[in-house]
Image (cartoon, rainbow, N blue to C red; front, side, top):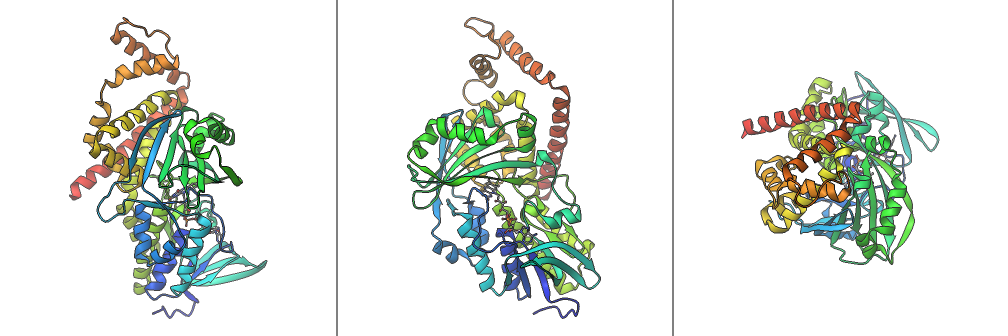
Length: 492
Ligand SMILES: Cc1cc2nc3c(=O)[nH]c(=O)nc-3n(C[C@H](O)[C@H](O)[C@H](O)COP(=O)(O)OP(=O)(O)OC[C@H]3O[C@@H](n4cnc5c(N)ncnc54)[C@H](O)[C@@H]3O)c2cc1C
């Protein structure tokens, strides 16, 4: 097939060959279109990441026919995870078996994974160009022109349609006015590789701590006794509270007993490196324009709760390839026609990403950090004694259960009514943290609860502008999620 437009050399030009770009290009080539895939790097190349491929990512990769290439790259199978809170173990569980998804994920360094996917695209018939940096696009009635620098010289590629898959620092998103500059919708994260890691290679470790919340640290084992180790936190909290992420990471590595147990005899291979994660913004405009579709990190599709972006990069690639195919068949490349891309990706994952964004917005309130960590602890404890609850919570964290299920009445009631009552434990928690200093045996529990609530209110009142902004943000996002849930119920 191929559109016989005189004005261009390719039906589709894809900018950026991360998982999103390579997947979109492969899908379109498999449909028979002439596809160009351009990247500024030469493969193999590193990409700062946790290197975890969730079961949902594996399902999309399977549909693209690259499972064999993936297996040849010798990934490590992750089947379980342990969760720690302020240095203490809280819970552990396995990835549940849900529908046709695998009950395991893979870890594979992006240096290896991205190259495997890139070469798979070439084998599918995609024309690949490396070391070529796209600087700008220009759209006219005949097509889209991508202006680039190739080996220091200017180059131009013409296509009917462009797919922007150029990642977190997307030049094309910036040019089109879709750049994610919102520091509340970005995570900053650090990553390092370690050799000589001990413990079960099928078990990932996740660490929450009051000093870097909302965020988490991780140890994701790789093959051959290696591990991907990192720490990430929401950017506006990190900026507002002047948190030194590198110091936090080193402190955690040196002092956390569970981290020491796995990494005590290991040594760092290379250095600690950082990269931003543009997370989902529910109120953002579209991810499409005349003759252009944005996918993956260029479209800010990362899940704000767990930082997973490979699945949504692959999924948005799959949807964009289907819409590009329709556009090429119809010869329609206007924004009004391409709006169907927006509708399709929203139907696929808007509600889940919105829910994640809402939850992160709620827990971002630092004066209430002790309470959020208590809720997390209660979730972990409940999961140890309730298999269905554990499957839902573990499934949400590992990406096999839709995130909006975390707001089901069953989960909320089970969480808050877990064992000793919530407010009673708040009292103990604040006494432990020395926030009140008034809790003692025989003190009337009702008075104490009121005192604790006032203590927290006092802390909130010390930052009035922040508290009001937080409240408004949470209310607006809560209403957005509610709307999505109601629309979902309406469709059932
Ligand atoms: C620390 C950290 C940990 C993470 N952990 C995980 C995890 O464990 N699991 C998970 O699912 N997600 C994780 N993510 C998110 C994940 O890395 C991204 O969501 C994912 O890489 C997005 O894929 P992409 O194809 O959209 O973009 P990218 O993978 O960033 O690829 C973009 C490509 O575009 C190229 N490019 C950029 N600009 C140009 C240009 N002008 N011209 C030509 N080429 C260009 C780049 O060279 C690159 O190859 C993590 C992110 C970070 C930062």
